Amino acid sequence: MPDFLFVALQYLWPKKALTQLAGFAARRRLGALLQVVLRWFVRRYGVNMAEAANPDLAAYPTFNEFFTRALKPGARPLADAPFLCPVDGAISQFGAVERDQVFQAKGHTYSTTALVGGDSRMAKAFDSGLFATLYLSPKDYHRIHMPCDGALTRMIYVPGELFSVNPATARGVPGLFARNERVVCVFEGAKGPFVLVLVGATIVGSMATVWHGVVNPPRTELREFTYPPSQVTLRRGDELGRFLLGSTVVMLFPRNTFAFNPQWQPGGAIRMGEPMGN
Image 1 (cartoon, rainbow, N blue to C red):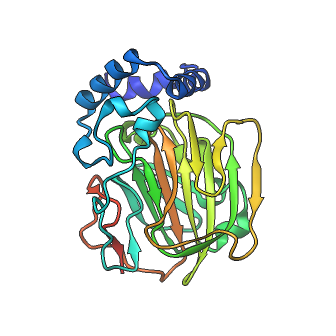
Image 2 (cartoon, rainbow, N blue to C red):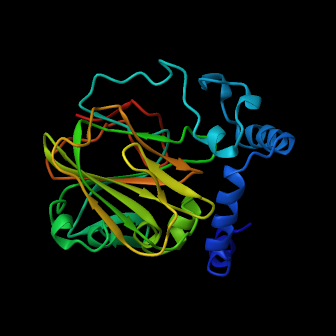
Image 3 (tube, rainbow, N blue to C red):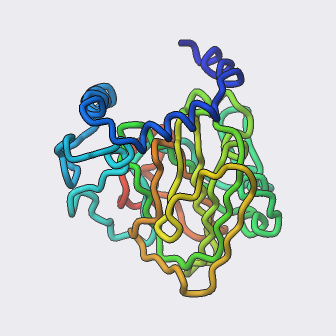
């Protein structure tokens, strides 16, 4: 299907209803039917089950448990670098935040203020700072890990659209990542505040964090949670959360925090634990 037609159809699809249906099915124990679906999914997307902690498809009673499967110990060694890649996937874009604007794709930017739910004071901390947008495809490992040490200060659930977040949609839908449903996780680190935004999408039934559990549904209104110092402290490489079906992570860091890995390039493949910057 041509990209323009795929994008245009998304404005017509009942995206929320499709996502709710997918989430309902992914939580259900479907027995033999599930095994048929899992075998097809592994073949269709080239999922590497050899690196899963349990490679036996029959061991997963629901699609969600398969999709958020753990990896074998040592499958993602942590590089000797201060900032690590937090996910498996592909680099959508990365670079500098310019006058509150994040580059999405050719001809498209969006504001950090909109991305974090409208908090201009928070967004100002990232003026002239750094951003990275990382896309997780269906075949990828779908747990999200910490890029560096951090203490959680806030979590904001921002309701929104449920467009796909694949590269074709990123090129075709203005302000995509600041329009879609998202969970904004705000941390304080050694170099100041930093943010990881978990962006939802069509068919992404929900997002979960290790300190809260499933954040969405409900999807009705903006919700904010604050955390006292040291209540939730995570180390570099610790699990932060997971997507129940694939999506995108957007990161924000203040200026002069680090220099990106010189081997990074848009479209390049990445693995959790690899060096992101120095």
